[in-house]
Amino acid sequence: MKKKILGILLCLTMIGAMTGCGSKPGAPADTGQGEVQGEEAQTPETESQGGQEEADGKTFDGETITLLVAAVGIPEGFNAVCEAAEEKLGIKVDVEIVPGGDDGTNIIKARLASGDMADILDYSCGSLMRALNPEEYFADITDDFGDRLVDSFVEAASVDGKLYGIPSHSSEAGAILYNKELYEKYDLEVPTTWEQFLANCDVLKEAGEIAVLGTGGDSWTSQLAYLGDHYNVLAAEPDFARKFEAGEIKYADFEAGLASFQKIADLPQYMNSDHMATTYDDGCDMMMEDQGAHWFVLTRALGNMYGLYGDEVNKIGCFGVPGTDPENSGLTVWNPSALFMNKNTEHEEAVKAFMEFYISDEALDIYAEIEPPVGPYCVKGYKLPDECFEAVKEMQERFFDTGRTAMALEFQTAVKGANCASICQELESGQTTAAEAAAKYDEDCKKQAVQLGLNW
Image (cartoon, rainbow, N blue to C red):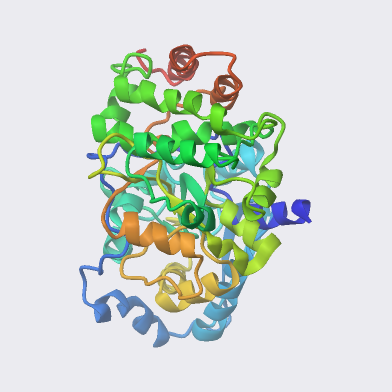
């Protein structure tokens, strides 16, 4: 059954979601504070829906637009939205799938260069988007959709202040999933500092519980304490991403950066004894079977657990990796991939009408009913459905609605070491210290920086 759920996971994430150590950066954030996910759109409701009203008055019957995506499959939620768009607007969406990874990227670059690109491309935000030269190939949709989307996504899908994409699915976070029933049993409160978190782990360990679920058998999960701590790094140095890319700051020499690796080193004493052999699939079962109180993981795991255990997943809650300031406890967020409009499309009005519908409340409800979101959507004013995962509601209320989110580093800089997962896995297994791991990662990033022509 676990292997079947992997298919669900891959569909949910489509092209742009992180698969452990991928590098999909974006523009540097000016602060460690993210934008408020649940705030109302600044334009009146009639204006934000204006494109849809206009589209309803046009004739798109029989008009077909094409969409290219690099993925292993298309989520059922996406298919349902396309069906609704055809019924409502008369627009048929012809989807073409190419392989994921480097092979798919090479195909996409070749198609762009030859002028053979589909009307819409589903692709990653951040630096991977920038590597496609979006100014040359994609339409500027700032005036059409900029006010409808949250600023953090706009930042990741823009170049030089011009927006090129809309979100293709929900966001997700690098966070700590926790068992709310165990928290209630031991009278624990959600921590707002790392010290409080470790204190909770001590209580659980003394009671004979597995305080932290380790799934080092899949090395990408060993990174999450470090990657998910990026909100706290930005809180200490809002300009960290720019300085890191410029070689002006390193993890080993920066207190808050070194702390991200120290957090990995703090965890093994609380983990299951076989944590280096336990896999991600095992983790989904163990969390649902009360064999772990906390799990550092991407929130996409909620979709896996739901597929295995149904509504029992709602006993799982979510909070961000805590830092040192209880008044500034936040969440590190991974932006979704985006839908980009081909600048040379012959179906501009139909494409815009489809994109307007795609991020409407109606379409988001359709998508969410079939594919429950594993994080809030990047659309202003959209209220999550009542049947949404409780953990996602918790993310929305605790972090997005209060503005305490920040994009993951890979959306802020192109510099990401290829060996991040293995370095963190060595640290988790006790083979290295936090200081040694941080220095190793700095050196790993230097190799990529040199390849990118940066002065490191």
